Image 1 (tube, rainbow, N blue to C red):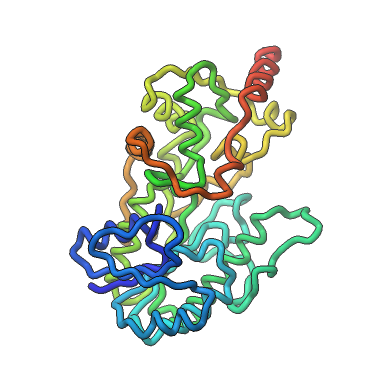
Image 2: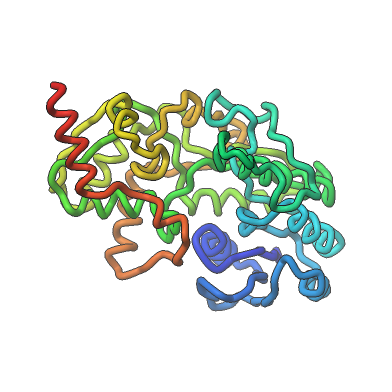
Length: 345
């Protein structure tokens, strides 16, 4: 197999490259070369996916058996469309890493493949889907953009040559968003740890290496399709996740569970101030049964937590990203909320 990875320098892209190299495949990456690493044995093509000249130069260096696009998270649909059209004649199929945020019902309702998607044209620019009044939040804009990205890939490659993967939260070594690293660092400090909501609340994060493995598997398969890519519903809980963080870092922390009501009364920002905590009913009810039927394997969450801690302890540092600064609660604020919760008991 000869594949092109759009991105390929860090986190998911790097994991895809590592998986393909382990299989003995020929790998080309296309990125700007401003962050991440170039692994030995990889042919790197430097360029910007927003440049038509760079895309034409890239396409001329094909053909490839498949393209795996890991870097479209912050690209508007029209950029995805231009890239897909430029590569359509240079590759057999396109594997596009999307997100569960494309669903109109996320995060309020249970989701399955085939549910209604958000609007978002294939040729939309970066402004499409923004809420000028700010009432609907950033997820609406992000979901519309990514739904448009999916339609862009389908417009260029069609359903029979496009694999669309919709992960939820991706964790693991190299994570740059800062969700799991923040919880691990908080657990390392020990003491009373503010544990959000209900201990038994189900969660569905997935390991970056498992997403990469599945993407590479599909790159080799003729045809196309759509799969949600999450851990099984009900397998993991917020409690099992946080307990794994405490155990991985030495067991010095004590979880203190604080109800959703108290957290909301104190204005705690969902999803970021206490990462992975969100009160919406459907946020962790994503059916990924089609992916499992197609061969997706999801390792234990405890393994992801342990390996990420070992990665951090080895001196590795995630690629800097502005989203990381939004994650985590201030220590004084945490103590204040814990004290308020104790007074209600």
